[in-house]
Image 1 (tube, rainbow, N blue to C red):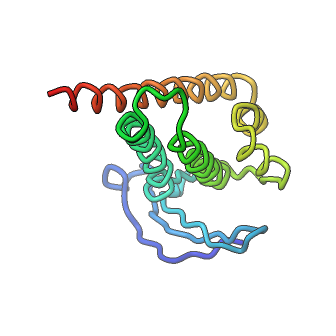
Image 2: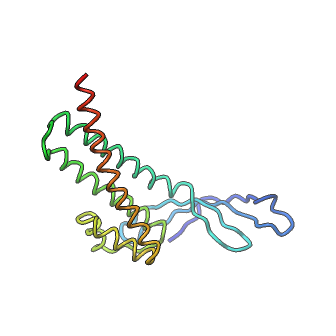
Length: 178
């Protein structure tokens, strides 16, 4: 269900003489499963009818990625500070739980943006075994080529998270030596 919140007319390069005219919009769509509102903003090109969704929809996904990076860095620092040289610590459990929730939040925003209908089984798989659930989602929602690219980027994000955790440990280790 889509309900319009506001419309304003704008012009692309003047909008006169057959040029494409755009209308900006904001809309609310209610999730079929949870009934929660999802907010969208973007432009509609009047001549071609193409819809470009941008603005507010991309911001939460980016914020989740930044939160994940900061979480990894802070978890490494906390693990080194409270449990120096321990192979694993309670901080790792917290990192795993909060990381799974961030991955699920990112998946939820991405599925809303792409219009992919989430299933209960896939929701559980994303939280429980993200390493398998997200690539499955990428291939189902994007196709083979874009799914492979998204999977590679996901794996690089995992490597980046591990490196940030190591960096957090190193910052605390070398910072406490001075």
